[in-house]
Every structure is written in C-alpha cells, then in structure tokens.
Image 1 (spheres, rainbow over the protein chains, first blue to last red):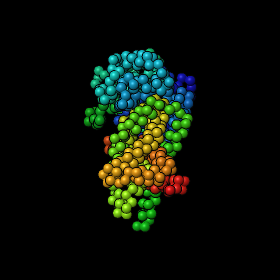
Image 2: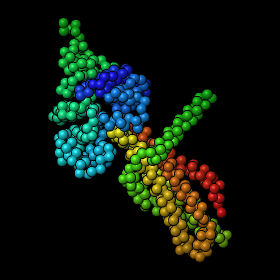
Image 3: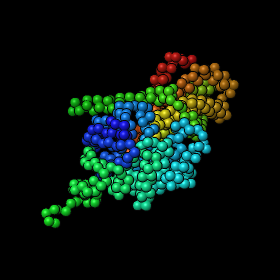
Image 4: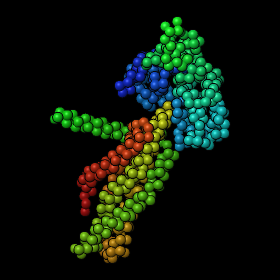
Length: 255
Length: 263
C-alpha cells in the first residue's frame, strides 16, 4: 500500500444470514479524493461503508486504513483509527436525548476538551459550515430530515477527520437541500483536503461530487472509473442505472 | 420422536448457555472497564437520579404495605398462641432477609430494568450505538459502566429504605391497629434482629443490582430491529431479570445462611 492511499479494500466478503451481501470487493481510495459508490438499493453499499470504519466484521478480506489493517482489531484498538474518520449515517443517528449543540460538542468533549467557551465557538463555526446557524438549542426530534443530516455531518467533521464516509447523504431530501449537501461535500474536500467516500444512488449527486465512481453490483465492483468514463460507458447495465430504466427495450424491435 | 426431543432439549440448553455466557461476558467487560477506563461521573449522577431518586415512591409504597400486611398476617396467627409481641421480631427479620431485598429488586426491575433495555434498545435500532462507536466511544464505557455503578450505589440504599419503612409500617399496624404491647414488641424485635440480618439485606441488594443491570442492558444491546424488537427486548429483560432475582435469591439465602446463620 503506497503513501497516497487512504483506504484499500481487498477481497471483502460478507454474508448476513443466508444472503451473500459482498462477494469479494476490491477498492482503493487515494488521499484527498472523493469516491462515490453507486448501486441498486439493498446492494450492500451501506454494509461496505460500515466495514470501512469497523462497525461490521467481514467474513473474509482485508481493509487497510491509512496504512493499518483494521481486521482483527478489538473495539478499543479501533478507536485510534476511528478518530481519523467521520461517518454520516443515513438517518443522521443523532443522540436524541441531546440538543444540536450537545450532539456536536460530544466528540470534542470525548476528546478531552473542557473549555466551554472553546466548545461553543467550535460548534458555532461548524454550524456555519453546514448552514445551520443559530439552531444550537433545538432537539433532534424537531429537525427536518435534511437538518438532521447536516447536524450529523457537523458532528462527524467537528474533530476534523482526514476522511469522511457518507451513507446516502442526499436520499429523501428535496433537490435544493440535496444540492447544498453536495456543495458541502465538495467544499470540505477543497477546504480541508478531506478524503470522502459517498454511498449514493443519486446519479446527479455522484457526477457532481466524485473524482471516481465505483458501481457495486451483485456484491462486486462492476465498474470503476471517472464520472466521464461512466457516462460514455456503453455497458447496458450501467446505462440502465444512469438513465433509471427498469427494463430495456428489445433491441430487435427498434432496429 | 425420541431423537427430536433430545435435539429440542439440547438446542434449548445450548442457546441458554450461550445467552448466559453473553451476559457474563458483558459483566466481565463492564467490570474490567470500571477499573481501566475513564469513568463518566456526570452520567453516573444522572443515573443515580433516575434509579435512586425516581424509585422513591415505588420503594416506599412497597416497603410500607409489605411490612403492614406481614405484621397483620403474623399477628392473626401468633395471637392465637398468645405470642402477639413476637410479631415485631418476625417482621423485622423476614423483611431484612427476604421481603425487602426481593421486592425492591422486583420493583426496580420493572421500573429501571425496563427503561434501561428500552433506552439502549432504541439507541441500537436507531444507529445511535453505531454512532457512539464511530466516534471512538465504547458503548460499555458510555452506557453500561455508569448504569452499573449507579445501581451498585442505589440498590443497597433502596433496600435499606424499604426495610426501614417495612419495619416502621409493621410497628404501626401492630401497635396502633392490633393493639400489641409496644414495649414487648420493640424488645423482641431488637433482641432478634442482628447485624447479620442487615448485612444479608445489603449483600443481596448488591447481587440483585448486578443481575438487573447486566440482564437489562444485554437485552437492550442485542435488541432486534424496529418497535417490535425493542418491545420484545424490554419484556424479556423484565421477565429474565425477575426470574434471575427469584432464583438467585434462594441460592444466596442458602449460601449466606452458612456465613451468617439465623439466630
């Protein structure tokens, strides 16, 4: 694994119950780049993402994060690696008994920051980044889906991780909010040099933010390339996905 | 037919052993974390409020009416033999040794155990526990350790309170309602109630605290998806912890009776 690689996945396999979810995924993410993982719903994209931060243990394969193999590490050993990585869960996964401010302050307090003023200042700053100024006192239950995701994002980046994983950051959001989240992901990459892995089935979002796109199909990486390469690919499976077709028109009839 | 029966019994035995093993592992990890990891005192205090303070009314009512009814029933039987003044001794010893610890534990299981498994279960199914882990915070350190310590502190106090109120209520019923001679009542009670009875009450309280916290938290942490999953985890936590309290109580009684024989 060379210096410029943030994440490397080799032969990752995972079954849940009877179902084979991942059947040998190989993937490389370079430092500072944004990789979008696309694929059908239920295709194992989120499962793959959760493996990258050690929330799930694979049946086979290796995962290297910043030069360290995370497989076989205990929960406590993983903590050091997890401090380098932030993850935005699909639902936001905010702590529902805490306010927005307490949610975002949580990682700072856990890292040993005791200065109230400093914490409040950092929370204010990060809320500005996610365009939610002045929402400190709200409870998660009173936030809309998009706001929850942005608070979740604020919480995962407040400690300035070098890598952020996004699980469906734009699903279920209106186009305007989706666009603002896409711009945010872009901005984090440009401003802080953050490596990003974005799981999505929103093609517009993938084209907008990604340096590379990986198409996960039947538990394997079916396609890997730049957005341009994806767009001009004449593979019928990929074309269907990009254009959102559920059935192909029979070629013979149109000819 | 016969092989199927053996298979069914074997299967149940295996899953029961692995369940007990899981709970014991959780206990071992938690106790390890108490000594090796940073303790979150603020969360501990919050849990003390939740477990200790919010259980006050429940424990008081349990203690008062148990002591009262026990005094009355004992009097009805003993007065026929002219032993009405022995009621005090019987009530105080049995409330200390059995009724106080067991009934407090059952009430705490229903109130606190249920809320622990529901809260942790909800956190599990809404990915909040994954979020903790992703933020490099061990769920045992953050969720289980504060609850365990708070239970260890609260339970003996709650049991002591239940016992004291039970004895007071028994006194009130015997002296004021059933007109037992107060002087003899107190004399008998003080004579027959010893330090060992109080130690037994508090020892049981400590054991029950651990049983309740580990069984309830384990059910929460292993809760299945959805509202049904959390509901089931909560029910199972209450049932299992209550049964464990009753079963362990017997063995604790037998074991402790060797160390502190009844006078």
